[in-house]
Image (cartoon, rainbow, N blue to C red; front, top):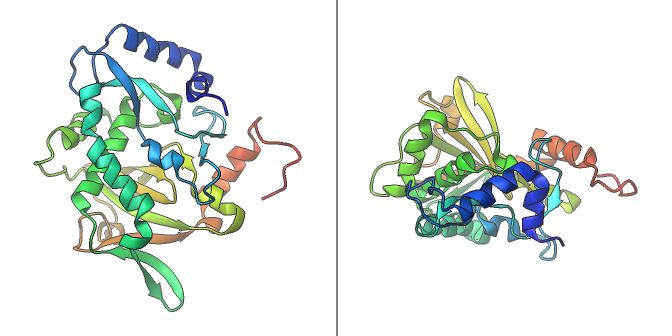
Length: 278
């Protein structure tokens, strides 16, 4: 398995040279804006890349053409050009909580919601919804300031400072421009590798609201970054809308996300020609 630094360089030599220059020159941290030594920082926490249903394989990281070819990466991708050491520690509490809720203790914290014999959602009454939302916003902010092509589709523009303040000011409410809804994929057999993949964030519109699809293993988050409202059905299920937190259950095999990931992987030069079809 090649070292992750080599994988980052494979994304873009220009990007790699830029972040190395920022580290050596003591460039400004993107959060505190102080000129300090910068550290290797993840946008999507390392835990989400280390997690694997099989216990023996690493999650597949899937990106579109600009984001790079699909690859297995044990600790994901880091950007050494965005955060100083002090600011990096501010994300630790949120990253740990996000990994606990969405990875290590999801089955313990959430119970299935049935319609007949079909699971239509998962419900939890014991999740700190404010902290989980701050985690999601913090991931999106880090992606937006990253120099890596994997996150090139994320641009918070005029909302970037508000996203940064979500981390810097935990006692203040999360601005209403940030709202998130959870999906939890169900997959069996060989599709589990894809359901647990880390795909690059994708921007789209739902109604008149701008949103990002953020992939965190088996959980996908639709996060609104807009002054517009989500459609009523989604609004009622957003994080913080009710005392219970809901994650919509999705069949990964029938989703467009599955079709997209398979297409990207199969069209990649890394795809073995003799591999069995999915």
